[in-house]
Image (cartoon, rainbow, N blue to C red; front, side):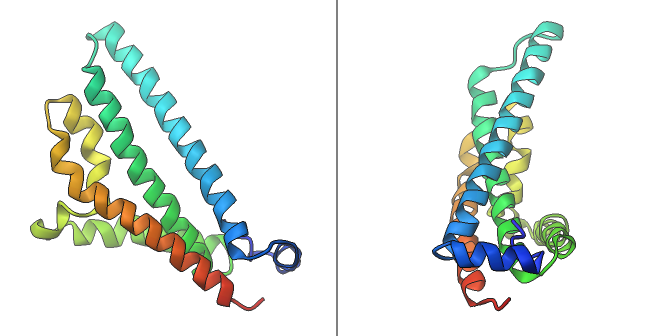
Length: 165
């Protein structure tokens, strides 16, 4: 995501791409695809081991959990995409992303009225759904996550367009 981290490569990328959207979008899509695939494969292995050792968990709940957790992971990739336009180095991108995902969102979740709307609530969905929870309690967080993902990508493209080398 940090295509501006090395000035020489940044000039190369920016002079050959039609715009920042062409630089951000492929990185975002490939990262999301890899994250979703890795999470789905890991969950499938965990489901198989659980089915062998304890008994099969409810398949529908596991699939719903995969969808909700993947939505949160896509949101996290969007946070990284936006953070990459704030800093110039990979280290600053990592720092900003960690601060948002592990400090800002958990602190905001301390407020009960806000916590059910935060994308971070989606990360607890797989365990809750398998133990008998309902997916309907995650719809507000899913809607906010999808809107925030689109907004963060739009902001990232706008910031990258205005950034000087």
